Image 1 (spheres, rainbow, N blue to C red):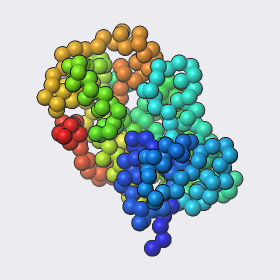
Image 2 (cartoon, rainbow, N blue to C red):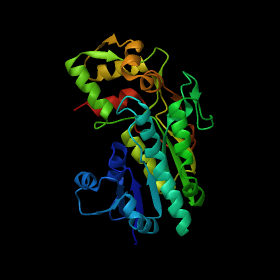
Image 3 (cartoon, helix red, strand yellow):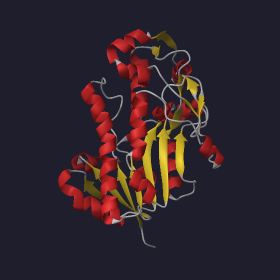
Image 4 (cartoon, rainbow, N blue to C red):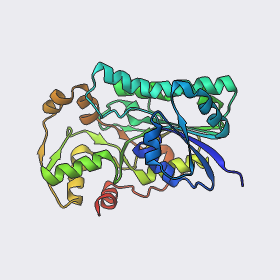
Amino acid sequence: MDKKGILIIGATGFIGKAIIQKLDSSVYDIYIASRNLENARKIFPENKYNFISLTDSSEQQLVEALINCSIIINLAGENIGNKRWTDRQKEKIFDSRLIVGSILNALLAKHGIRPEVYIQASAIGYYGNQGEKRLTEMNEVGKGFLAEVCDAWESSACVARSTSKTDYILRIGLVIGKEALIVKKLKLAFKWAGGVKIGRKNQMISWIHIDDLAEIVLLMINQKLEKGEYNLVAPNAEYAHDFYRLFAKSLNRFTWFVIPPKILQIIFGQMAEEVLLSGQNAFPEKLLMNNYKFKYPSLKEAFENILRN
């Protein structure tokens, strides 16, 4: 049986690594595209991957990969929580998402390449801050910097989406797992500083366990779900304060201090308002309509799995 070629852009992040772990190398010929090949080879040292450089001088390599791959997954994007949102950082957040999509558009159109499956990352920040309102895939784009970023992100690969047989948009919520940065930071905070809560009382956190996310992407790779936009979140969003309380309980700790929103705004600026103090009550309507059964539908179950060791 011939292997199917699969190109993953942004594979070195938490989500990309989880997806690659799900892929059977006897079934898929896996291409990893990265701007930092040295780092990519350290993360994936096994001699079963093809590495493609995402530099200006490597267009031919990327074209060959696109020709050889019937499946393209684009996860590229600067972490929105890495730094305070200066004008330069906001530009970096924008460009890191749009440039890759633009490159794919140009190369696919120029060479007449038609992928079988195209999967494009986005985020539930697409909906903006709408408080406790339940948000399905039918809701329109919201307001704010993150909503603008996500809207442009989803539109950045219009040629790839329109020319592929099946295309998917992943509106991803807060992803949790043993290796998730937020989990590592919270464990450290609860171990050394006691439990804290962040966020407003009516703030919702829509989350998903990394195992569910990777499984859903695998279904998309195999075209087991109808095409279109998907909210990649568990069916039970939590209020922010309950999120931190459940985390503490799973560690046999307690939360005793709420960081005042004003302090977060002073420290983090606009990022605090749109990331730390805002949220979405996103609901995975299309996944449930497609009969997807979540492995971790509740936050309690998810935290028990993540924190039990």
